[in-house]
Image (tube, rainbow, N blue to C red; front, side, top):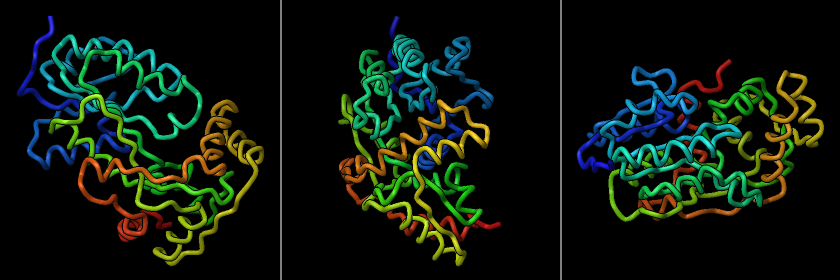
Length: 281
């Protein structure tokens, strides 16, 4: 039987990840009771171990969800979302991606569709590429630290978004009304090429760092030579191909709509990251 939990904690699934940890920090700064879960937290949550779900959702009033991040993500969300709703979780906020809607591939929207069918008051966040990819994702950060980033993006543009903005939007959506059955596309305030992004990092660090456009085939060959399975390598290359082809260059107003301010700029992010030693040898 469904029970409303008006005063329960806010559940953050994926609480140690790129956005989840920022969501946890933001909510705690707001004085909220947060239940932070992942496969490695004291209260454990695993998308593929349903025995972990009951303790995670028990008493929670709302949840921020980062899905299973693989080909079974939609199926897992279709099982979990109604499970949570049945136990009184009133609001579900899903981290998706702006590119999924623009891709023309319906299967990439499987987790969104599962959420919408769950009976919860749902909100979907669709961000662009994270600025933190240059500091936390080895696909970008390792080559930048090594001095040369090789990608099949040509001179395509991407309006990178700060994960702190995603977290602030998520916290607002979780703790205030008026966001039900709404999808927010989130981007930074301007679109940059990979070359411009690398130049910004080079100037902030005082290091010689270059960007080299490569073909998709050469990029896939490099990833597979490093041990990545070819199917995964081609998927990563396809994501960068969307940037190359201009599909991700447009700006979105979700940050402004939710927070009433412009999103953080890439140059400011790079300045903070460089000062913290993000790209030191």
